[in-house]
Image (cartoon, rainbow, N blue to C red; front, side):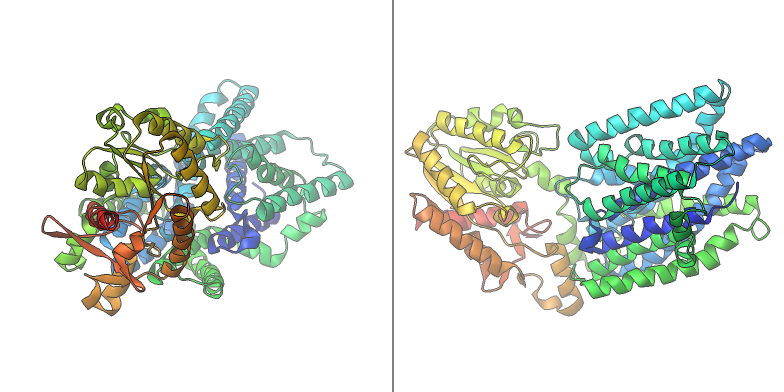
Length: 633
């Protein structure tokens, strides 16, 4: 097919916003749409290549897949190889285990499925995942596997049937994307069916341009449409943000902009000349390698500096990613795309060997628990027993703890949460996931404890923090249970620092008053904030492993502690002045600016939190005993 410099220039408009978005530069709050720009371009180019070869009578599946292997795998595998030693040196066992899972998933084109399955309320921060960006490569790779087969099947039905089928798939996909963005946002973001319409738009453009009359649109129309298309892409980049429902109908803004640019940004137009500018084309040529390099560099830098990377360093890393991109484009991408330098048999053989090697290496890292032999057995024992599934099981998820991801609602609180404690000697704990963590200790140290906890829902009457009133429904239901049970004691606890956008003090006062109105004999206890490790306790321990091994088994600094104390003072005033009582978790776990990192349970040491702030069983029992001591005073 005829080479179009403006398409490479458009690639630059896609990759630069993505890099700046992942660097956290606020003007590029919608830079994530660069991936959607890539999807439309990929759909257009792949379909154009297939159509050209079909028209010439020389299309073969083997030849198609060979080009994809040459294009994608060499640079990808090289970047993964570079990541391995840094992950080996820096990552704690749990993080190394998750990294190993991503290495295995990338090798079989399934990283988007892995990251979808990992996503959730308690997931590791995306900024710390070196291979997170490969989800989009997996989407494209799945498209590359399926799309040529689809065309070969529908081609026999005729060109019109093929185009109609593509259009129908696009319509179904965009409708599914919009629905899933509301009800299953993680699946909508990561999976091919909800991204397929973007690839289909590019494919439909390729069919149109293959069939269109030779007479182009008039110059004024082309200029206007190209400007409008560029405006749509720019609007999405600079105005969308993480609150934008995406992908959904909003994704049509940048993707239709790309469609207009492909159709009308010809070399004769101003926009076409702009996109053909030399440095933009150059950036477009290395855009694939730039995309590969930037996320591992950002993630590993954040991991090594304990998420304290600042703007100047991120800007430097962005420039460095472009430099590395040029090197890998020049010395890896280009040679492997040269059929004289590497024959097809060699490319397929190397691709298979490397894929299998990464898969088995990743699988071994997963089953080994993150290559635990790199650390002292005591450290491994401390860091390996705090798994997500173990902690969530203790929180009684699906029983008394709701993860409100669309699959549960307030009606799912089980009978075990209610009937076994339905008398006036019961205690009740109410709150979000922090309250679920605290409930582990309360249920271990007290009898007759009812638990009503839901992720992301603070125990504040009348508060609406989601459009669909999920948390309000939960809290209204809990108030009905309070009225029914008339519990002796009510513990109110949450990740209070998470709700900075509301007037906590006013809502606490209103909640206390509401409880007193329906359960006047209940003792109300407001439990303050637990320590917040940045970015998590494991990383705080890792910093000590590097600098000072001696103190890791006792107390560690908590940089955000002073801010939490200010929040607690507001809660204390609201509680103590309105007939309730405030209990300080910080006073129980911390002295000055250091907090307890290790607790003992049944003769074994364990971390007090398994992420940045959610208590383990040992931490929860330790804190609960301290809180009960405060109550007894």
